[in-house]
Length: 267
Image 1 (cartoon, helix red, strand yellow):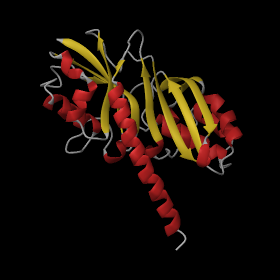
Image 2 (cartoon, rainbow, N blue to C red):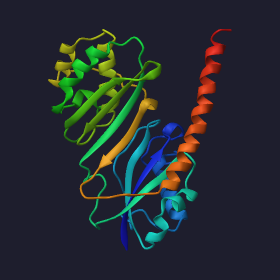
Image 3 (tube, rainbow, N blue to C red):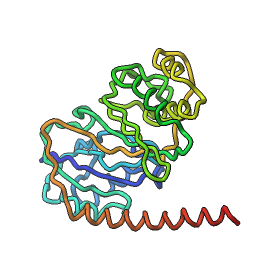
Image 4 (cartoon, helix red, strand yellow):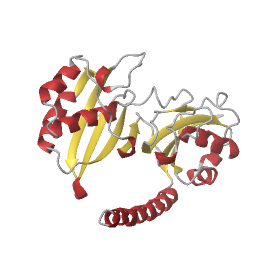
């Protein structure tokens, strides 16, 4: 048996999140079925399957990592695995790893990008507020209630930039994230950027003052990277080319749909 790690991407729009759920279509469920149909695994537990993160319904990824044991490493070539996956899920790199490798516990950090439409937000106020979030803090107020483990997390970076078309980009890296943590951070910063709240309110949240933060919508969130020490992934460039062409086709379709929405609004 050999242990392999795979890097994958997916468009999360049509899925009820990443993690397997009974009677619901999930990204992980589709992946496991694909691995079984390809002959790479016969049983999830026997193969010691594990994933680096869980993403909520509607969230996307381009740097998610999974790992499992298999008897046929040759079949782990991404372009082969992808023939057993839906079009909106793709594997694009692989690496043979140590038998003890765990993609969740061994991660050095995870990084997300959030894309927001924000034409009227004060970017400088948001940047100033975001500096308070850097470092180790208790992010209980920025997580979905019911967490049973520590809510202490260390944020390594939080960059906010304005892009074209009135889009604002949030890039956030941390050792690990709580459920909905990124979306609630974005939600809090939007409240500050709109003038609804001030920076003192954000300081209070970090100091444990009770508050309810509405998470930003899931469709703007992308898991962009999960990093490891001394693991080198072999990229399948054929897959990347194919997926970029596919995504370009989707992009053109949505550009047209955007123009249609604009015209309908003028009727």
